[in-house]
Length: 216
Ligand SMILES: Cc1cc2nc3c(=O)[nH]c(=O)nc-3n(C[C@H](O)[C@H](O)[C@H](O)COP(=O)(O)O)c2cc1C
Image 1 (cartoon, rainbow, N blue to C red):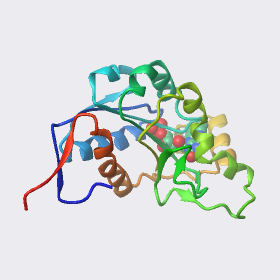
Image 2 (cartoon, protein in one colour):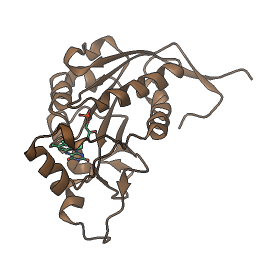
Image 3 (cartoon, helix red, strand yellow):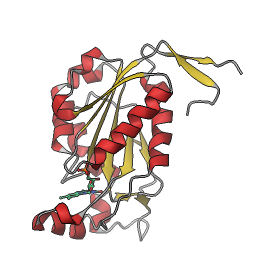
Image 4 (cartoon, rainbow, N blue to C red):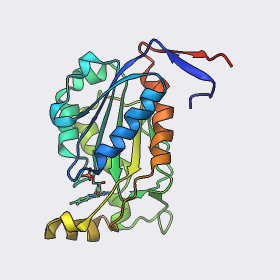
C-alpha cells in the first residue's frame, strides 16, 4: 500500500476503461479515475466501445461487470490488445453481487483485492455449494486469463455492483436470483473503491512515475 506522505512525480498517463450493461459500472470507473487523478496521475476515462489503444498510456485499468462471466467487451478488449497490455502495468476490476471468500490473496501470483462487504466466507468450510463454487475468484477470471495469459495484472479487484430487477428479462432474472443468488440492491461501496484505487496508483505508475516524500 502507498505510505501516506508520498506523492507521485512524473505524472503517469493512465487509461481507465469500462464495460457496462445497465450503467452502474460507469460510476465505479469514474470513482477509480477520480482517485487516480487525486494522486497526481493524468487519467483518460472511456467507455470500452470508444477506448483507445493501451499503447498510448503508461498504465491501464479495465473494468466491467460479471454478467454470465466477466463482461464480454472487457474480455474482448484485453484479448485483442494483449500484446500492448502485456508490456505495461494493467489492473482489472469486476463488479459483482456475489463472491466467495476462498481466503486467497492472489491467484497464481496475481494480487487480488476483495470489497470487504462483497466477499462471503463459505457456509461450510472445505465443502463449497454450487453457487459458492461458481462465485470463486478463479472461476470469475478464468476466461480472461485463458484468452490473455501473458497479461499479468498488478491487481484484480472484486467490487460490489448494482442490480435492478425491473430492467431484466425473465432469463436474466432467473439466472441472477437462482444461480448467482444475488439480491437486488446497489452494493457499490465507494470507500472500498477509493481504497483500492489509492493502493493501485503506485503499482500502475511504476513505468514512468516515481514516488518521493512530500514536504510537510
Ligand atoms: C444476467 C446477469 C448475470 C449476472 N451474473 C453475475 C455473476 O455471475 N456474479 C455476480 O456476482 N453478479 C452477477 N450479476 C450482477 C451484475 O454483475 C451486477 O448487477 C453489475 O453491477 C451490473 O453492472 P452494470 O450496471 O454496469 O451493467 C449478474 C447480473 C445479471 C443481470
